[in-house]
Structure formats: C-alpha cells, structure tokens
Amino acid sequence: MKCPSLFALIVLILGAILGGIHGAAAIPATVHPATSANATNQQFEQDLTAAGKLLSPGLDFDYASLAGDLWPAQAKTLRDIMGLDTSDEAKTARLETAHAKVPANRPVVTGAPLAAIKTTAVYAAAIYCGTADVLSAWRCGRYCNDPASRDTTVVRVLESGDTRAFVAVRGGAREIIVVFRGSVTADNWLKDFDFVLVAYPYARPPAAGLAARDVRVHRGFVQVYEAVRHDLLATIAVTAQRYPHATIIFTGHSLGAAVTTLAAADAATAVVSPSRVHLLNFASPRVGNADFSAMVGTMGMVAVDRFTEGNDLVPHVPLMAFGYWHVAGEKYAYMGQIYACVGSEDQECSDGRVPFLSYDVHSSFLGQRGYFGDVC
Image 1 (cartoon, one colour):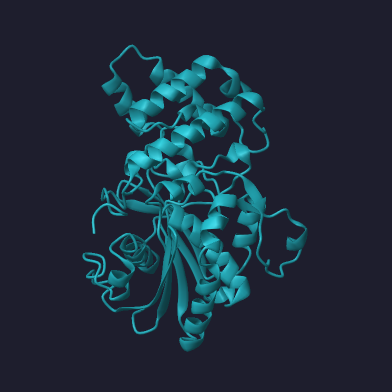
Image 2 (tube, helix red, strand yellow):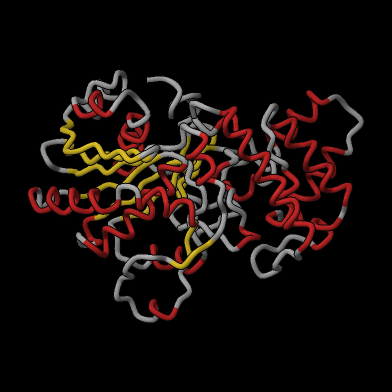
C-alpha cells in the first residue's frame, strides 16, 4: 500500500471506536468461541496491545480489539509469549511465528488454479500504477510488461473521486478482467474501516430460501462501489456480449478486493450469468455477514478464490465479533505454497494466525514485499 501513515491515522480512530464498543458489549459466543475472560481481562487486553506494537511497529491499531475473535488456544499462546522474561526482539520473533504451520489436510494449489492466481495478481497490482491514461494505453511499467498481461486491451477505465476500476480483455478474448484499486487516500481508508453493516442493496439471485435471509454488507464498501456502479455494469454488459465465450474475472487487492466482491455478486445477478464469473481477490477485508457469504457461495460462479498472505492483518477486519464473515474459497499462502482452505473461516489457514498479525505483509504476494501498490 502506498500510504501506511494514512492507514495508521484511521485505524487509531477505529481502535478507539472498537475499544469503546468492545468494553460496553459482550462478545457473541455464537460468532467465535473466544472465552469471556478474553473480553474482560485487563492484563489480556494489555498483552494484545503490546503484541500489536511489536508486530506492526508504528501502526496505531489497538490489537485489543481483536480479543473477541480469538480461540482459546490462540489466547493461551499470547499469554505465554507476553509473559516471558525476555527481550522485545525475542518476543517479536515468537509472535511472528506463533501458530504458523502447514495447514493440515489442505491440498496445495497447483496447475491451472495456481497459474490463474499468479496471472490475476498482475492485474490487481497494475491498477495502482499510473494515471487513467497510462492504464488505458497499458503502459504501466512492470505489470503491463509482464508476460502474463502483455496481450491486454483495456476497454474502459472508470474513475469517480477516489474510486478507480477498469475493464480489460486478455488473451485473445479468452478472459474479461474487472479490477478495482485498493486504498491510497485518507478518504478510502475512512470508508475501508466504517464497519457498519447495512442491508444488501442489490438484486439477489433466485436461490431457494435466499429471499428470507438477512443479507448485510459493509456500508463503506457499498459507497465506494456506487461511485462507478452504473457505468461499470454497462461496460461489463457490452463487453460480455461482444465476447460471449469469455470468462469474466473480478479482482482487486485490499479495499479493491472487498469492492470487487460486491461487484461480482451484483453483476452475476444483473448483467451476466454467474456461470461466467470468477471472483479471485487478494487480501480482502470481510465484506458482509454470514448470509452474504452464503449468498455468494451459492450463486453458481465459476469459482470463488480469496487469497491471503501469511499473517496479514487486513483480512481479519472488520471483526467477526461485529457480525462479519468471510466468503469461502480462501487460498492461503504460507512458506511459498498456496493451500486450498475449507469453509469461510478456516482455523488451519489465516484465521489460525489471529492475533499474531502484521500490517507489514499486507502489500506482499508470495513473499514479494511491496508487490501491491508500492513498486510499479
């Protein structure tokens, strides 16, 4: 990400808000099986705060807000590490590797699915680079010159305020790529961490029982998407009609990943068949509640892939304790391999790394620091 200092400013505000709410309300036991002691024990919250300062130095995010999303085993590990009579450097080393392991009984992603992740990451990174004119001409530097993306024609770049997206055709019309940019301004971050859930505002697919569900999504992400929604859907509809056999890949990084999740669900109901839609995003925050996750998972898309990098902090906000739930399809990167996880919140994958999380890896891809947003 280009502006971690802006992130720090906003998460300081978020931390204060979460801290206030966290102290005032009980953690719903049905959301995540954290012990009630985690939420009320002052020493435990102090340990969380201190751990956060070691894991993400300079980031003003109070890790105590994560207390409601911990499992008992994670809480015990935290207490054990922070109780050691040793240096901060030694504690940091232990925190960074706590609960880091090869996921048990989770297959390694190989072949075509692995190639799709690597290729799509190029587009999720490219949107950070240059102006709309630069992207339109596909002259954005290393990502536009990547062998995986050279055969790309940009159909349209859409911009409104701080929202940016583009629609492109890749590989002789085999794929249509829809990309949203992640956060690069203070206004983006404000929307990113406005964690209020609102009713899903778009048409729902005609699935059995879906109409009765209370589908809710992140208010700030809806606001970002609305800035370009009309023009984006029109562009997708025309391009999909022009290339009727092309798969439509929706992607983005960070805030861009969250907004792309909304766009994919919306487009797959409004303008194209879900059987043509592949949602493949990177480092996404949680977008909605469990009913939204279920809706996305039952729409009949080609695939839903949600890439997470090691102990990245951002995929763990907004909190499950406040009613958020990831879409399924996590692809978890650990030690150079990518693992196909199970369900929406898999303890064998990134969910098992809470609270031993770091913002420093948020722009990384398969160990390459700064891949998203820092180097073009």
